[in-house]
Every structure is written in C-alpha cells, then in structure tokens.
Image 1 (cartoon, rainbow, N blue to C red):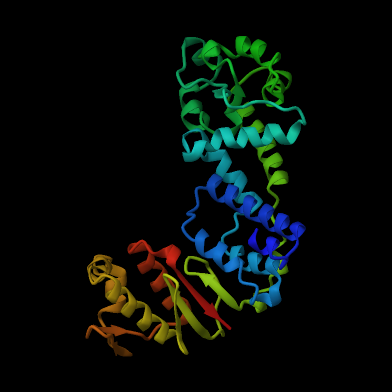
Image 2: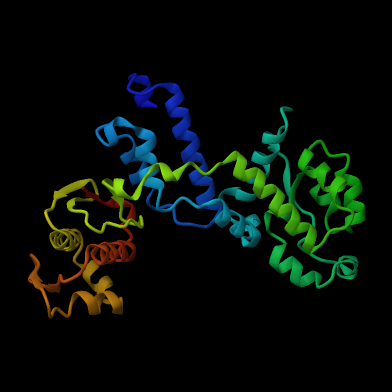
Length: 329
C-alpha cells in the first residue's frame, strides 16, 4: 500500500497482488501447510529492484514452490476436520462462499457453524445412516457437512428430515441449498457437497498461472523452505534475520550460516546434534573438512541442493525458518 501511496505501482496492480496473496494464504491454511515463511515473502515482494520491478512475476517466483494446486486443495478439504482448525477457518470458509453467492447483506456475527450430521449421534441417525459413527468420525468436521445457521441449538441432533424443514426457510443460500438438493444425508451427500463447495472456493481463490515462471528463470531471492532446483545456479547471498552475507560458493554459505547460528546462541549446536541425520552428515568430516569460527570441524562436500536442505532442516530445528533466505543467479 505504501508503494501505491508513493505512486510506484498503481492501485490495480496492488489489488491483483493482494488477490494472489489472499488465495495463497487461504489455500495454505486449508491444506494445513506451514506459514512460517510469509514474512520473508511479503518483505521480498516489495523489492522493486528485482525482476525489473515486475511485482507479479516477483510474487509468483516467491510462491511457486509452495502454492497448493487445485487437486491438493480438494484432497485436503475432503479429509481435514475444518471445524477444529484455528482462526475459525470453517466459519470463514462458509461466509466467503455465501458472500460470493449473493449480493444481500447478511450479518454473520451471530451465525454459527452447523454440523448437518451432528457431533453427537442419536439412535435415529445411527438407524438412518450406514456406519454412522465411522462416517461422523471421518467426515463430520469436513466442509461438506458444515453450513451456517442462527438456530444451532434448536436443531441440535435432530434427524435430517426435521433439520431439512429448518434449512429450507433459512436466509443463508448455502443452507437452503442443502434442503433443496439432498433428500437424505450421509457419506455420499457429504462427499458430493464437499466437491461442489471446493469447486466454488477454487473459483474464488484461483490458482495463478505459475507457468509464467519458467525453470530457466530461477534467479533472485528465495525463502529457505522453498523447494527450488538450483542446479547450475551460483550462490550470491544468504540473509539471516535481516543480516545479509555475500557468498561466492555454496560451501561458504553453509559455513556462514553455521557461524551465525553459533554467534546467535551456542546452544543451537546442541539442538542440531540431537538430530542424528544432520549430526552424522555435518560433524563427521572425511572428504572436505572445514573449520568454523568456534573451532568445530564440519563436512562441506555436499551438492547445492543438499546444502540448502541442511540449512532448511537446521532452521526448522532452531525455529528460525522465517528469518532465513538465500539469493542465486
């Protein structure tokens, strides 16, 4: 928004970028993927010196490796207990779907998320739905079994035939549609509705054309948790907690990272050594030993991709993933 205020980009560009980020954020949450690299992405996005000032291309580069595609989103929403996700993700998803369907102004503040197949099953539900307890356990909290209502307590665990009468008079189109579309409620209905609602969410939060970013164009800055093929690329810089360290080789990047880690907190090395794989790879030098500032001798005979994997794993162990990025050319 500051770039808009200073006339470096126009409002339309900012809106396009915001829509891409919005879709990325929603998909990450719905797919239960980590969001610890977001700070670096947002800070990196605002650097007009990269990609010739093309912020859309810049953003797509930053998001390319981790943007959940349509298939992953559908697979996740088929399985994830959305109701118990943090930040009221279930209600948010349902409100977004409803607002996308209608221009009517609805106050959702006092609306509640309704489980069509209730959380507590009674005898009628167990008689009407085959393997009701198993269906509830597997699909009860998924998107397809959820809707919005202001009469949650009144309906409680009533059978579907009675709930259906409530639903058809609802001012929420999502809820009315349930009564209009499904005569019975069970596993098949939940799966079918999940697919339908996911298709709508895919339209609301579309997948950008990531193909705009060709593999040959991999240059610039990346967060350490991004999966990027750096074969044939040269290391230029590693950034740790906003400290920028120029490098000439991948081995030098590894040494600088480990030196910074020691200077930041020497206990980090104890945490690293508790990971058997990292400890075995790093602290048993035999091919290309190198000495760090603290006198520790490490192995450095690794490919660029392995060095990035080592740095990424150590960053995760030390909880600094969102503080580490690297630049290639």
